[in-house]
Amino acid sequence: MRPGPSDRCRHHLVWALATALVLTLAGLPAETRAQPFVFTQIAIEFNDGLWFLNADVRPALADDGMVVFGGYDMFSSEKLFSGNGGPLTTIHIDTGGYSNVQNVAVNSLGSVAWVSDRQGAVLYRGVYFTQTSGTFLFFLHEGPAAYD
Image 1 (cartoon, rainbow, N blue to C red):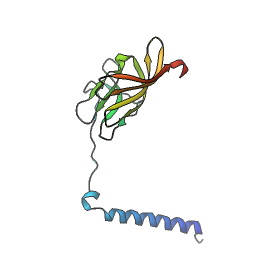
Image 2: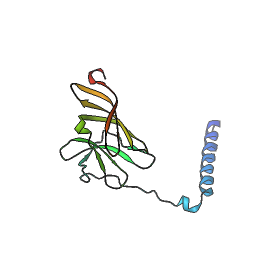
Image 3: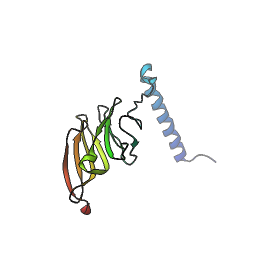
Image 4: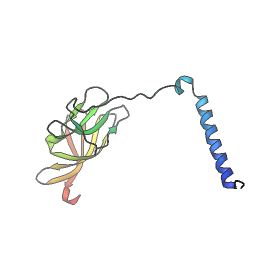
């Protein structure tokens, strides 16, 4: 059976993409093509005050390489941690009553924002802000969690 027009088009498309890839790689300097990926270890459990990573909080990465992620200390208190390959900085969100952290974001200026609960007179839910140094906490918006 002869291949139909769609089979020929598909064959030509695959050939064109493969050719474009080969030509692109051939145009790169040899040292660029041969560079291996470099991975930097940011954190390891049971070091720098981090006992367990919080797998429910996706790590946030700033353009300058700073990473902010959720974890727990040896007392199972929820914290945020920041680091870029050296010692970790602990952001003590638990002292402000913050818990159930989600949606962490960080920028190159060291500003960290996240969504979480905060225990006050009632349970609040809000968007909060601090620096990667953990020097101050500020809420951007919050309301009773019952009205989530």
